Amino acid sequence: MDDKKRPQDLSEILKRQLGREPRGEIKVVRTCSFDMPEVITTYPVITPGKNGKGITVFPTTFWLTCPKLNRAVANLEARGWIDRIKGMLRDNRDARERLLKAHRHYASVRMGLLTPDDRETLKREFPSILHVLEETGVAGIKDVTNPEAVKCLHAHYAHYLAGYDNPIGEWVDAALFGLL
Image (cartoon, rainbow, N blue to C red; front, side, top):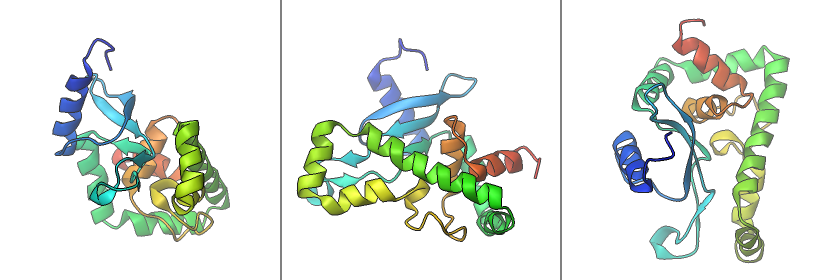
């Protein structure tokens, strides 16, 4: 995205793309051919949290913001692609190993985004939230070793489009372009 665009311009663009006000700190990591945000990263926690108290874990680190891609991925989900991908994972040991690495990478990036002060606050005051941030994978998957634990193709696709190895995101990309 053009660095000359003012932050409020980015906020307005994301508001239109998402259909609501964006929350938390945001960085554009991929733009489309029209120089519009396609994938963003978001800060792992939001303060204040629910009810104006504490903190809340942000729902995703890599976020697919392009409305056209969001609709296309939602269409895949509606056509049963989550179950199809679960079957593809069951039958492909290499893809399962790559997915485990993708989950670990996702958690690592999420932890790397935290400031030292926020990390210390989480450790001291919100250890259960820190545990969630350290241990969950793409789309908040808790059991990252289970190939049946697949949800939200959008999150996997955003991770892949951000330039990281993610077999589910790769398969989504292939499906969107008629290669699967």
